[in-house]
Image 1: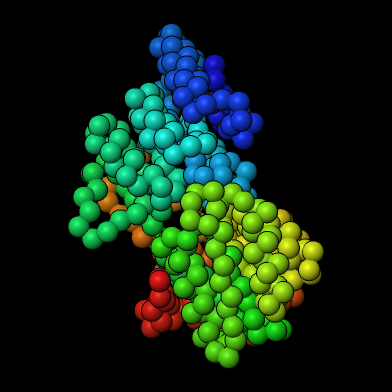
Image 2 (image 1 turned 90 degrees about the horizontal axis):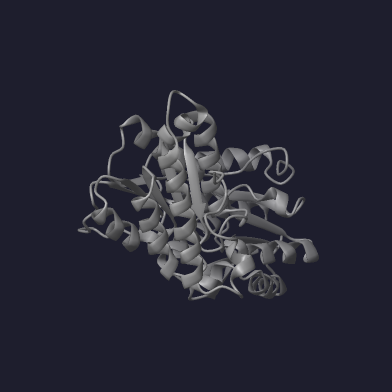
Length: 360
């Protein structure tokens, strides 16, 4: 039987140069067929096999960069692992190498045994809605769903959005209070509205505490590849360091690994994103702006399994616990009690609506 935590196709990073997108999908189809055949052959009593057949199943398709990005995708995977441990779910996942694979993978999971199908990332927004309409009996979730007023969301879809600008405001304030040069940097991945939210919040938080300072802004590109280019990330980070930046915040997926390399080489500080990224550059991570993607995935799986799933748009900010920043023994040398107190006061003002953080 296929292990529920294994990929349904070979690791795309290893096969990208040798397998076409069509072949990868063929392998995925074959794996699904194999799994379905096995499950249909199982039966009888309350055996372990029968329990697995009856288990609530989640099919998840990762964003660009796939598992191992130490950030957004890994956070979603942590949510799956917790759901398996705490809720007894079974899951499969797939790492698309090309855009055309996203919709196909969602459809394959929906046509198979998955009770809940999850697309991780804004690029899934249209695909999730399209496939959900074809499979109204299944439940779907899209992390970072793109949504405009007036858009119709199928009733079996929950779109989860985060107020990234609010968490970015707090780490921007921390950068403004810690910087020694008065100049900080931002390295974005793809130049799109979603990443502009990180930039806008970071800039606003910095300027709130350091109005005489400077924020340098650079983006890695305008395609999805901008989220998986560490070489470019390092190049942009070094350019900002050369202009005086001593703290760099990235919102760029695995491109940010290059930012971490740059701050290690130049003995500067970086701010991680989505997950606690302290381990990527110990001694050089000032903090991380975290998005509780793992919590969102877990909560959605739990609601779908418990029968309390509700479609629509969920927006999670500081007030809802959807975003935050890391404060622990690894960064207390920079985030002093005085700085911590000031930043927490800003958190309260944002949560209570007394500070409106710009999202663009």
